[in-house]
Image 1: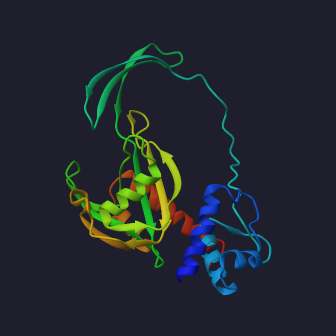
Image 2: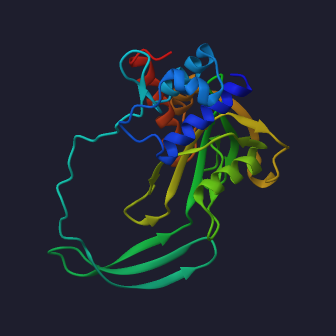
Image 3: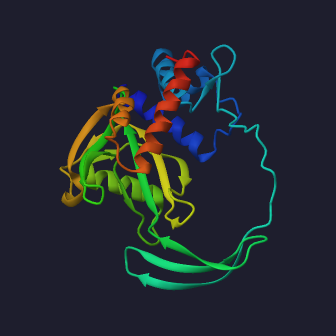
Length: 263
């Protein structure tokens, strides 16, 4: 895409992410978007096709598009009786990790102390380019004694917006500044015993601004074809749950786009 198309792409994504175009809502007509975004019909349809491929938009009748409704058919069973928490005592605490014993009482079970590890809040980004390649890092992790591929990401500083963290960490670790990042999910990687919220962001497009400034974390930087990811996964070359969650999301979105016949 050229500069005008890339700008239009970002503007439409931002309008969806901000709620200006609401879920289930038909977006303005192609004629109106042409005027609003300053694009010709052919360029606009390339942009809209890419957004359909990424499941940001869906086709609605002839030459019309809308934001997917994102409805969920499965209903939750409602609130059940939660565990009672009677207190907590710290066993170990430093700037990186805190270990605590929490006094808990599950329904119908006697009270006991449960180990809880509290780690930092983390933000991770999966950035694609226009060739369907993902920006990744080849790193060594001494805990597992393993080399492998990871997505850029890191700790959310106190008071920092996780979105800003994802942008900052990507640039520091790879030297590439993402054009746009959209939040996908917040999850806990080991919900039974470890508290460490992980924020996953995805985006398309990035500009090279400098060599990586975080030399400890940088490793080898590369744009990896998305089509290579299943093979890397099978060979155990992908490190970390955040990397797996983000890449599985990209693969699922790609498969959904292909199944609907998106260009």
